[in-house]
Amino acid sequence: MVDVHCHLFPGIDDGPLALKQAIALAQRAVAAGIETAIVTPHILPNRYDNTLAGIRDAAASFRDELLARDIALEIGYAAEVRIGPEIMALAEAQTLPLLGTIEGYGIVLLEFPDSHILPGSDKLAAWLLERNIRPLIAHPERNKEVMRDVESIARFVQMGCWLQLTAGSVSGVFGPRCRERSRELLERGWVHLIASDAHDMPARQPELEPGRVAAEEIVGEAESWRLVRERPGAIAATNYAFQ
Ligand SMILES: [Fe+2]
Image (cartoon, rainbow, N blue to C red; front, side, top):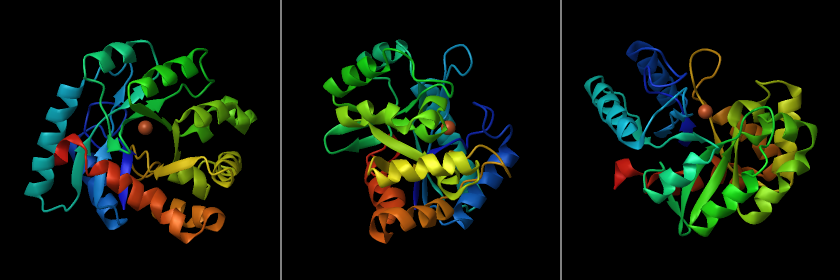
């Protein structure tokens, strides 16, 4: 399986604090059947001021650490980018981190605040789509506005954004409400990918299989594999790390 949203680099965001925990997460990912991880540190101005260049360096040194320990996890890199006007400057400077490219569109992992959908979010999404950058909206099932009304995300899907569910939401780790919203999004056929959003152990682990199994009940086995293997695999194949 291929995980397109996880926080594995030490000390760069709210993922693992130190290398020891980061290595443990990578080992856990391998044990859970994940072959490739695109690591997506937060870019959140004034809190996590990560850049594409800094993330590239973090990826290179983490890959060396994994090689030295014989841990067979392929490492790609991008970012989980918080929605905000600075995204436009990054896109214009070609430094907006992308997961990869599929169907002619670069894919940016876009994070909304948990509390609500900011006014103007649809305009920014449309601006990106016009430039052949497709927002992949991270865990909409955990957004309070979507939790109240799943239809509040509909306009984003209709304009061409993709949605990424967190595996633990689908399997019920984050409670019945998150699970229910995940199911509703899957039933509508609005979900393109499932990812782990792993941060630390044991609360948020790099695991996809429990989420895939839960999704299989709703979308069938073939589509459940497309969510965790085929589609993320096609994106990862074009990630910076594998060019
Ligand atoms: Fe995340």
